[in-house]
Amino acid sequence: MQRIYLDNNATTPLDPRVFAAMAPALQGTYGNPSSLHWFGQQARAALDEARDEVARLLGASPGEIVFTASGTESDNMALCGAAATASASRRKVVVSALEHHAVLHAARSLGDGGFVVETVRSLPGGLVDMDDYRAKVDESTCLVSLMLANNETGVVQPVAEAAAYARGKGALVHCDAVQAAGKIPVDVLALGADLLTISAHKLYGPKGVGALYVKRGTALRAFVHGGSQERNRRAGTENVAGIVGFGKAAALVREELPSDGPRLCELRDRFESKVLAIAGARRNGGGVRVPNTSNVSFDGVDAESLLLALDLAGVAASTGAACAAGGIDPSHVLRAMGLTLGEVQSSLRFSLGRQTTASEIDQAAEAVVECVARQRKVFALP
Ligand code: PLP
Image (cartoon, rainbow, N blue to C red):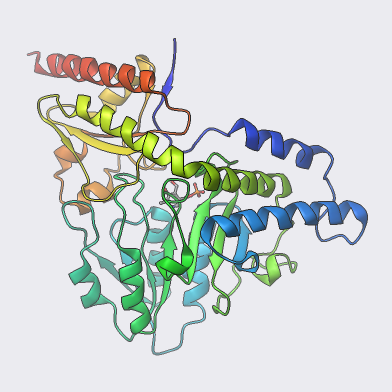
């Protein structure tokens, strides 16, 4: 059976060119980058090259990139590290209700530690409510965290506008760009972010490697203690092969985004034109979206049953964030957008990738049409 992978927001396949770049780093370049001898310096040079590429992808300087073990770690490092340096008069952290759990749960832990955590509402279309945001961000705010693209709907948030407002109040700005990098251009200066998270496995790189952009001069307390790696920002011997893969993936994304973006947008729209033609199908998330993501509710259909039926038909989709998939937690993002529990439980996310073809899109859309019809028949039985 031909299998069609439409769950690229959960993770992307490793690009073969990334794999090829990683192979020498896994075998020959085995020195410790902190060692002074030739072996160590080979590994150091490989790290430096990767750091340059990741920095270029974000419009940052290489010295502003800290490698971590995941997007989750970068988010935690940003929130906990920035809050730890906040003055006594700034005890408020502002996040949006649409954030990934890596941000929401890190914020919750800050709340447990005595910070006031404010959560900004979403508008029905999946955009953060900027009126609510402006009401919550004030001179007592030490940090704001707002994602650039939502993982479930693909909706692009007004980060530059939010950052300018937060800066005016003297707060630091963290942006979770995990789902944006590789899908739309991400420029730290244009966004006005002090801290920004990306993750390699969401852009055709390896799993277990993340990066945090830390604007030069930003006070940030280290989160992992030990050696002096990553300019004392993050201790631990670097994952050299993973970072090399991240660098290659970043370079490819930078070169190919101008052609990949429009192609994916066209395929996503083609998919939606077929799927939204189903009676009782509605798209979740409007306005500006990243090109690869489509979130759709199907009235009267249980999303988990549909997901399994689609899997049997060879199509991989998702009921939401990967960490919540399989669990009973309904999507907090769709709930924040005002969907009823029933609507949330009838919603599926389809996320396309670099490898997705037009014929896959047609086959997948056909499978969705058939499976929805079959589900409705089954559930309509007495
Ligand atoms: N932030 C967002 C928006 C995500 O979608 C994800 C992963 O799904 C993460 C953070 C966490 O990244 P990682 O899987 O590298 O820990």
